[in-house]
Amino acid sequence: MIDFDHNAIDEVLQSRARIAIVAFLASAGEVDFSDIRDAIRTTDGNASVHLRKLEDAGYVTVDRRFVGRRPQTLYALTDRGRKALLDHIAHLERLLRPAKSAKDKGK
Image (cartoon, rainbow, N blue to C red; front, side, top):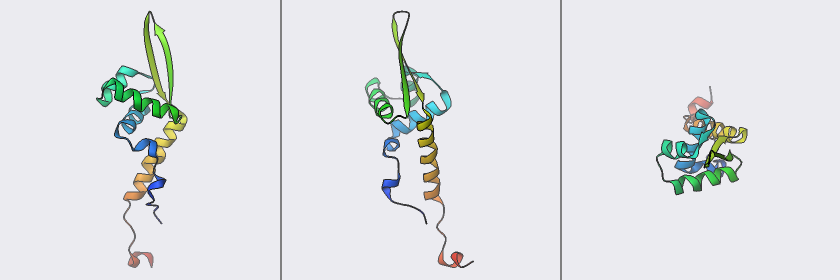
């Protein structure tokens, strides 16, 4: 039986910006803040808020450092974040499977 309960869906990944960030990091590895902001086409403030939520959930790590005299903030997807993304995709795929009709169930 397919679980259509909305509580089964990862709330952290329901934001368009957060799912875009996680998907981008899944393929990009460790990335600078500005690269993330540019990839998902949003503002500094919006990217910052969503990255903080992902960090609080344990889905991304943050490495703040200085390169020369300039601050640099790098983000990377954690194993937990990658698992959350894969679980989210798998759940959506289960939701999209055609339901078996009563006639098919008897076969």
